[in-house]
Amino acid sequence: KQEVTQIPAALSVPEGENLVLNCSFTDSAIYNLQWFRQDPGKGLTSLLLIQSSQREQTSGRLNASLDKSSGRSTLYIAASQPGDSATYLCAFLSGSARQLTFGSGTQLTVLP
Amino acid sequence: SQTIHQWPATLVQPVGSPLSLECTVEGTSNPNLYWYRQAAGRGLQLLFYSVGIGQISSEVPQNLSASRPQDRQFILSSKKLLLSDSGFYLCAWSVRSGIGNEQYFGPGTRLTVT
Image (cartoon, rainbow over all chains, first blue to last red; front, side, top):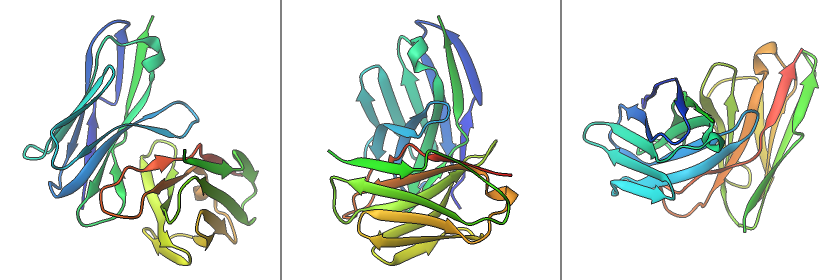
């Protein structure tokens, strides 16, 4: 069964810093991974999708990488802004199931 | 463009009462549909998914049920709510063809069972 771990659980940084959020998984037979953003009391917003054949995806100040051999994914946020404050979730679609398996999230606070 | 709607946005129900949450998708046809629950202090858990009208798969045993009466409508129901049913319920959709498609989530319904 796929297990997903996100570290750290919470992170507080000053505005302008570059930061990395980590996600690890146990089942290397994945189809893709998605990084989501969740604001308090809101639904999930998809940020980036990486297919299993890809190593990274970029969107604006965000860059997500995937290393299946080590069972890791990272989300890099450049030049962080207070508006980036939210909970970031990673999720994997594994080969043996149709559903996404989610990590517990990293709560990011960017201080002005 | 595709949009996904959920209602109600918030709901407070007593223990033992029935439940009906609705999700509809616009701008696409034949989607896969999903119900997730996010309980306090816990991650998102898939409850049900559907690949077509009347086709429902359950991922966890519970007192909830799901139905898909129309192609773009997904309903989550219960005959008698439990305190443990409280949580944030999210509906999602993905393109049906192929594997590994991106999932898109609705705004969610906050359910409090008292």
